[in-house]
Amino acid sequence: MADSKRQSGFLEGMAILTGFQLCGELAMRALHLPVPAAVIGMFLLLLWLLWLGRVPRGLQLAANGLLDNLALLFVPAGVSAFLDIGAISNELLAISLAVVVSTWLAMGVSAGAFVGLERLGKGRS
Amino acid sequence: MNTDLTGLTSSIPFGLAITLTAFVLAQQLQKRLGNSPLLQPVLIASIAIALFLYLTRIPVANYRQGANLVHHLLGPATVALAVPLYRQIGRIRASLVPVLGSILLGSVTAAGSAVGIARLLGASRLTLLSIAPKSVSTPIAIGVSEAIGGDPGRAVLCVVLTGILGAVTGAGFFRLLRIRDPRAAGIGLGVSAHGIGTSRALQMGETEGAFASLAMGLTGLVTAVLLPIFVHILG
Image 1 (tube, each protein chain N blue to C red):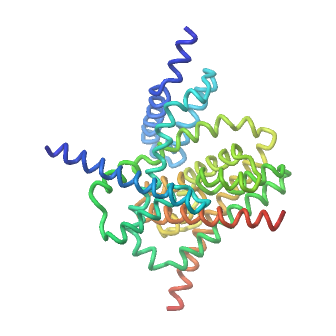
Image 2 (cartoon, one colour):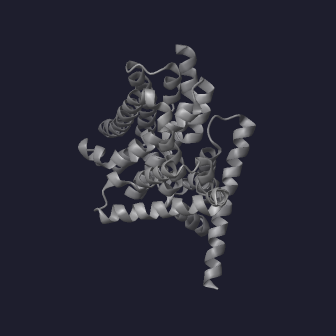
Image 3 (tube, rainbow over the protein chains, first blue to last red):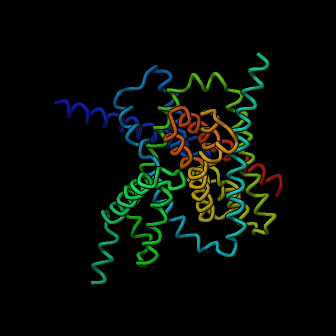
């Protein structure tokens, strides 16, 4: 009994998630947005949650299940990437240096800018 | 015998089972070796499977049959990022200007520095246009690189390597810079390393995860809108 209840909660959550992904797909196609459907779906679900004022139990279950294992979902893309490295062998040095340095730069600049802007705002108020 | 094996490796359970098994083994390896963030399971599992397919000469298309089931869960998982985002919305609203400002600066830095460095090192124009959208999630990168005349395959490669690098080195990098604010760490990971960085941020904590989700979404938006305009102006 308790088991079937839990299961329906999870399925309800998956229905909400895929439903919003579908809404994102619809919005992307109708408005010719350059952003992927799932990202639009994320912002739409956020708006819905803000309107609702709480997270339904089933949605929390499904979200936890997916987000606790999010890294796993990137493995197929990772496999393809490592198999493709041969295709860029003639520019491997330029590409890898650009990827490494710019990733660290972007990480440092954005995190540093947040800390700096936050301090600036606090100093003013 | 040979045809039987081809049938086996292109069956759904093949790609599914080796993806799950490699990931679980990589998780256990990381745990056993003292939870080093350098041994991210996504990195170890991807390399192990790629090596296995390369050595056995099993076509990646066969592996994809089953692996796509895992891959396609990325859609609902991305939508699910709204949940941590909602739980932290008060903290995001409280520092809206720093949040938006740092994300905008970070996304311009990511694309600009990647193109600048690759250009200095003599990369071809095709590569420059493919590397520019490297800090956004794969579907955006494919769309943007196509829109500006790059090569989508090369773009995806740069995106995935960027994400894995961010996830693997993020924690150590912030320690080095003495950035202890979990909100700043989340933004750094979401801006520079999209979904893979966000998955790492979620492991670090809910605050990191929420700020990374927002940063990932907005970086994608900024890059998708601004990059084609920049390329058009610069020719």
